[in-house]
Image 1 (cartoon, rainbow, N blue to C red):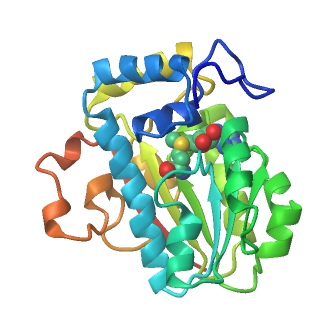
Image 2: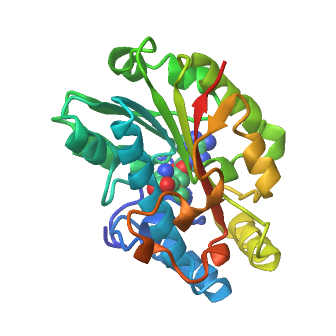
Length: 270
Ligand SMILES: C[S@@+](CC[C@H](N)C(=O)[O-])C[C@H]1O[C@@H](n2cnc3c(N)ncnc32)[C@H](O)[C@@H]1O
């Protein structure tokens, strides 16, 4: 996307979009100067932030492969973002060509590019919705058409709940999706934390609050673990994002605790 392209309707020209910022961090092309400038400001606070974004994206891929190996053929990807490398339907359908994927996002650029990408895919679709209204997502025609809640389903909340403020009840949002899942359904989640690098997290939080479309709320390990209420965490539990089932031991960086995002996968229990 060039900066002469018109911003899609519904976008605030004075704010960096959190979806487009993440796209810029991952080296994508669907972002504007205002997004890249905000990413440059985040990078000035944490020079590792692009590596952190890539590590988060890699966790998404590993989690989907793990879930596919565990027999899951249906995924609801909440806050799915602008399509880039390793999209959930590509990973899931590589394991099982008829795997169903419903993406959900409220960013106009994310929705537009997902719609184009999925036009010819009968098993994947995108819902333009706000995850803070779970009933809208669950009642959407796309979910009703593609997801059978009598079969295993995974809900993915990867780098999304830190955009939900405490007063917006993130635990209640997770609970609404959990209650829709069958026994044995899954939750994969990653979330920014203030546990290890509180100064970095505080400075980045402040920057998002002043410049981006959604403020960020970072949470402690205990608070993020609390979001798995009603789920049993699989091994290795809630860990720094590069440490969640790395493909190769060589993939583990020397400084995993500097990656200020926790990740985990849990299974709905009784
Ligand atoms: C950092 S990106 C994560 C993308 C993808 N899940 C990943 O981890 O690679 C966060 C996405 O969540 C979306 N988002 C934030 N708040 C949302 C909300 N309340 N409802 C729907 N989407 C939301 C943003 O538009 C953005 O695309």
